[in-house]
Amino acid sequence: MVILRNLDEGVKVALHTLRTNKLRSFLTILGVVIGVSTVMLMASIVDGVKTQIFNSLNAASPNAFYVMRFFSQTPLNPDNLPYEVRIRPVLNEEDARAIARAPDIRHAGLWNQSFNRIEYQSSRTQPIVIQGADDAFMEISGGSVAAGRFFTTAELSGAEVAVVEVETARRLFGRIDPLGKTIRIGSRPFRVIGLWQPPDNAFQAPGFVVGAIVPYQVAKHAFNYSDTNDLFIVVLGRSGISVAEAKDQATVALRRIRGLRPSMPNTFDFITQDQILEVIDQLTSMFFLVMTAISSVALLVGGIGVMAIMMVSVTDRTREIGLRMACGATRKEILWQFLVEAATLTLLGGLIGIVFGLGLGELVKRILAMQSGVPLWSAVVAAMVSIGIGLIFGMLPANRASRMDPVEALRHE
Image (tube, rainbow, N blue to C red; front, side):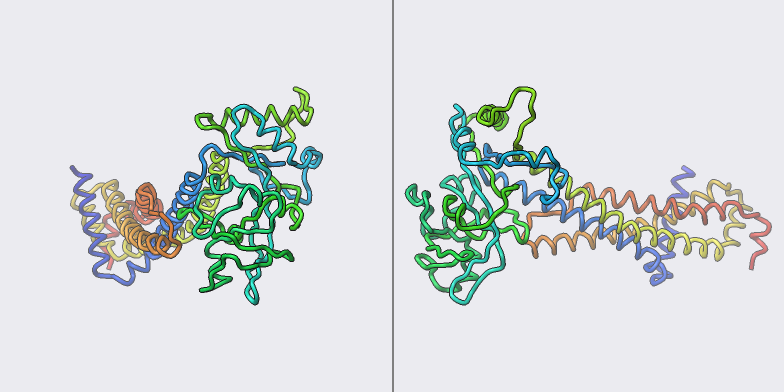
């Protein structure tokens, strides 16, 4: 009961301090407000990015995976690859055909990516991804043909045709109908036969938007690309076959065609949706930790401000403290009262920061068109951290108040 009474009293004193010294109290907790709102905003962005990527992967074929020359969750410098990676053979069409012959593999095709400008008359784009693919592109990447059509089987063998991404076509052609028009990709002419609408929930980083899809056989000879990792095999397992089973069969096929003995390691790597999500999770978690560390500076400043204002409060209320001690209040009760007061101040700052963070999160959601929201756990953690700051930085002034000599405190003017 004593603890509850002191808790109630500490909260009332803190609220009274806020009412009587509004500007001073607000400046005291401003650091806490900034720190908490930053953490909330970062949590919202990270959650939104993860949601967008997850939805984008779900929009594509769930049993698709990629075979690459190398894939590492630890970034590798393409110009300084480890020896065991440099000696790996480049993926080729024979590798793709070997995988396609496996009993539970429905499709295996060699694709590539290159960066080139797309030009139409006087309009042109910045260097953008040009995807060399086959007729499985729509099934694997998702989306739809917004106008025109996709490649026919005959065109896959080398026709200079292109399916252009809708937004890229809008920037190039404006109100002109792009179908049938001739564009230049790099230095080669291509006839536009269709427009590709990416999945609505696709997450595409700036600079990595697929601007156009052309037949792989044309892309292989028309564009410059790196053999290091811009060449990959897209694999689709049969319906009802798990990705793990399909990967096992692809592994057996590749090891057999490359003549690898049982004791030799694979000379290729796989990428699955789970691996992509794992890498993204690591990157976003690292980003969140960095931003949290930066925002902790604001929380530290806020904590120091709370400590300073509480020291002033202890000095101003010296006679009150002496009177309470003279009336029987123990040192623990005095300590508890000032700790509660400090924690109340920082909690109010945290609540303001949470509200501000919610508003910023909603604004980011609308600007970036993300399916994001501020996770509930971040609000709970923010509130707990705010209270913790008050308790930690309020300890020194509270301890000073509890150690006052009652007689000296009563004499204080």
